[in-house]
Image (cartoon, rainbow, N blue to C red; front, side):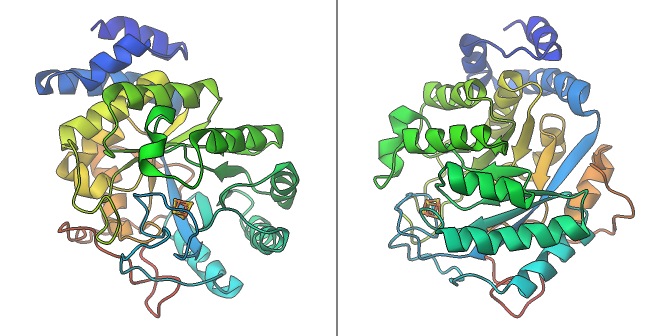
Length: 356
Ligand code: SF4
């Protein structure tokens, strides 16, 4: 592995080769710090010491007609998550305000389901307009499933900056994790987003039984499709889903190798450590920040994240600053429990305040 050459190409915005990406995934723990440091040089070239904080709002939870095997909201899921149809716009707005108050500079409005009706798109568009009116400097990312050109254009017109539609895993592995739609359906959506001026956000879930080659395949495919933001999730094996109890080979070291590989392939893109970082990377998260330039603040769609204040402290301790953040509270708070997947019971859909 010639890390110097990989750094040099990365600094020029060029991807590592597939062979190099595989080498990273298969490297020994002894090489990990050198690999993280090399990826960190590229990260700092494009993003200095800034970390983008994203805040998730689950507009509609559970009861999905799709069968993605990793998902707690899937058809037939027995996961004990909160289930609700469209949240009240005032409640959504309060959650958004809490996220922005906690330091988030991108808000992600998400709804479960195959895809939205025109009426549902209009409902979300009203929320987008309200957020952009009051917080023009906050980016809004929308994630509603499959959409066509007309719906994408109207979401763009409402003021959304980005749209998330994860590829999740490689084409060759997709049939193992979902039978109700295909990999190509998802990649086609990414192309629709680009055609309509929405910044494409699409990433993966590692740890679902994919091979190293398959993980490299999907990460390259996302690069070839011009994805600007790459969330890297690590499987949360929810009880009540087909992947219950499986965590594959996800050690903290391997998660860091995966993130470094993604950084070498996407040197100048936003690389986000997404759901599962708390469970799988654990106390190694300061090293994670050397590689990624983006994380979620607070809770995930159906599971708890770390306390927002604890993550802000993590950033500060490791020498990073929230992107665009002024006056963000940094008091220390306890880290979330890490036994099993803690289900979210607070925020939208409950009486309890959101975690930021
Ligand atoms: S990932 Fe999305 S489409 Fe798949 S089951 Fe979950 S909510 Fe439905």
